[in-house]
Amino acid sequence: MVLIIAFLLMTLGKLITCAPQDLSGKMFTFPQKTDTAYVKITTPNLQLGAATVCLRFFTDITRAYGLFSLATPGHPDSFHFVANRYQIGSVQFAVGDVFSYFYGHSFKLNAWQSVCGTWNANTGLTQFWHNGNPGSRRFTTTSHLTGAPFITLGQEQDTYGGGYDLYYSFVGMISDLHMWDYVLTPDQIKNYSYKLTFPSGNVLNWAALDFQVKGRVLVEDEQKHSFK
Image (cartoon, rainbow, N blue to C red; front, side):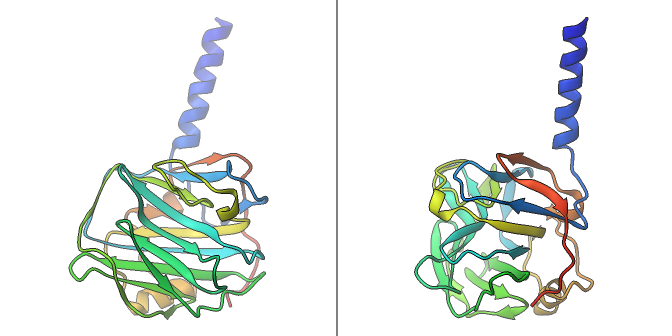
């Protein structure tokens, strides 16, 4: 009987952990350089012909670091952005395993800031936005993104669900993650950046996020701040 009760409690705990949670007013804290700690985001199979991903982050590191990484079977770089190790303020943005680089975004240390990435298969164009300001457009792919997604925050995947690199690990805080299956308008991205009214993500929604914490990552109250 004791074993049965323990099993039921453990199962219930897993169900509670895996149920979507409202993270409004919360943030993920990644407190150390590691290749084992990340947040795994769960969502159903994808069939995307367009996408927008936005999040906010805070860090004081100047090396490369992975912010958002979405892999599908056979395509570890289906959709990700990574701060580029070769030049501060530059970003490596991949869609469908095709890499683009965006420069001159002047990431600030010890300051909250927002980033958004957009892509549309009709044109193949991507664009990276920092604090509501757009970068130049780049061509990547016109192929759709399909399959079972493996999504991580705080690490960059070199293989589907793995291949994490200590020197690409994120140290800092991340909040307000949203993902849409369409390209947000410039005004909607600016509203997101300034914390005004914007449509919640219909693929990933910070107010109903299905996630699992792996390793030493904390869910904490969001610190009071202004976005710069």
